[in-house]
Length: 246
Image (cartoon, rainbow, N blue to C red; front, side, top):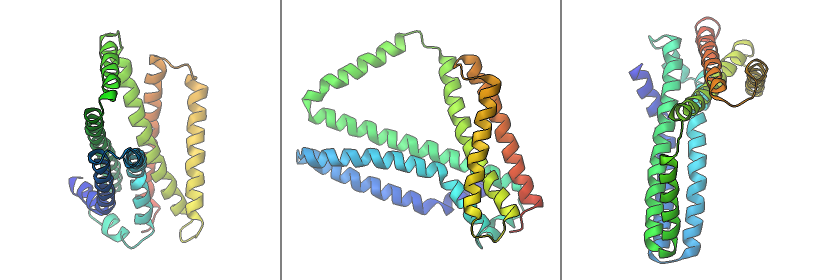
C-alpha cells in the first residue's frame, strides 16, 4: 500500500511543482507590493493568491479522479494494474493519497495566508483594529458553549462527503469502461453516471433521514455516506478484478 501511495505521489508531483511555482511567484509580487507600498500591486497579488488557493485545493481534490481515468485509458495502466497488488489496494491507495494531498495543500495555503495577513497588519497600522476585532471574536467563540462533538461530526461529514465523491468518480469511470470500452464518448457517459449516482444518493438520503439539520441527522448522514463509500469502493475494485481489461 505504501509503495502504491508513493507511486501516486510521484505521478502527480509535476502538478504540485506548478502550483508551488505559481504560489512562489505570487508571493514575490505580494512582497514587492508591501516593500514598495504599491497598493494596486498588493491588491492584485492578494486577489490572485485567493484565486490560486481555491483553484489549487479544488484541483488537488479531483486530480486523482483524472489520473485514474488516464490509468484506465493509457499504456500507463500496465505499470499499475499489472503489479502484484489487489485492486482493493490500488483503489485504496488512490483515495488515501488524495486525502493526504488535500490536507497538506490546505494546511500549506493556510500557513501562507496567516503569514501574509500578519505582514499586511504589521505594514498598515489602520488594520490593527481589524486584528483586535478578530482576536476578540475568537476569544468569545472559545468562551461560548460550543458543542465540540457537533463540530467534530460536521468535519467528519465533510471529509466523508468528499471521499464519497472520489469513490463515486472511480465507480462511474470503471462502470463506463466496463461496458463502453474503446468508445470515444465514454468520458461523457462517465460524467453522466457520476451525476445520476450523486442525485440518487441525495434523493435517498433526503427521503429517509430528512433535511432537519441536527446531531442525529449528521450522525445518520455519516453512516449513510460511509455505507455508500464502501459500496462504491468495493464495486470499483470488483469491476477492476472481474470486468475491466487493461
